[in-house]
Amino acid sequence: QKEVEQNSGPLSVPEGAIASLNCTYSDRGSQSFFWYRQYSGKSPELIMFIYSNGDKEDGRFTAQLNKASQYVSLLIRDSQPSDSATYLCVRLRADSWGKLQFGAGTQVVVTP
Amino acid sequence: KAGVTQTPRYLIKTRGQQVTLSCSPISGHRSVSWYQQTPGQGLQFLFEYFSETQRNKGNFPGRFSGRQFSNSRSEMNVSTLELGDSALYLCASRPQGSSYEQYFGPGTRLTVT
Image (cartoon, rainbow over all chains, first blue to last red; front, side, top):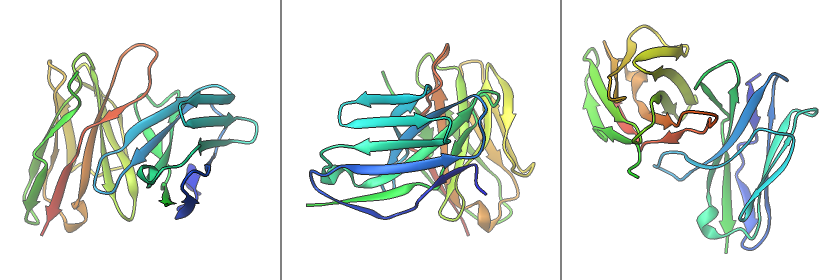
């Protein structure tokens, strides 16, 4: 079992709708989570990070962390065609310095 | 502030050769991490450097090595290249203090023939 699991998609979302991406992880140790967006042929771009239980909102993006259930999610409101990309769920364990652990990524396709 | 830069952007090498990739972090960032991205394995951690010291290493063979200079610039070296080393090599830097987020460079696309 991978340490960070994501559904690879593709997730097809109509323009203007909410895209919901989920990620589960394998242990309960102290850790932080990041969502990166990666366009085809480009490097990952940081969208949000979340360290504490609950919700964190930034513009059209909301990250949610539920440590009891060991999942992280990302909501994209009012999805736009420019949101079409692969979204990477990433974990950083507190004892691992800068070693990011990546999920396989969920491909999102926003259709006009 | 300028982002992370990587050189070269593209590279074609032959099996058995060696290659050196370079990364310059964002100004003021002293931590540099390297990742390999392939279609089959996704993004995998290679190593991290801070203040010229390797702090963490991923599960890659000893052919993969790196170093960091006093100005925080980093290089990674791959010796005796194999076809399976063809990948996008990404460098990321992060700020100090309580921030843990990493910022990626554009990557070096290595093709081994």
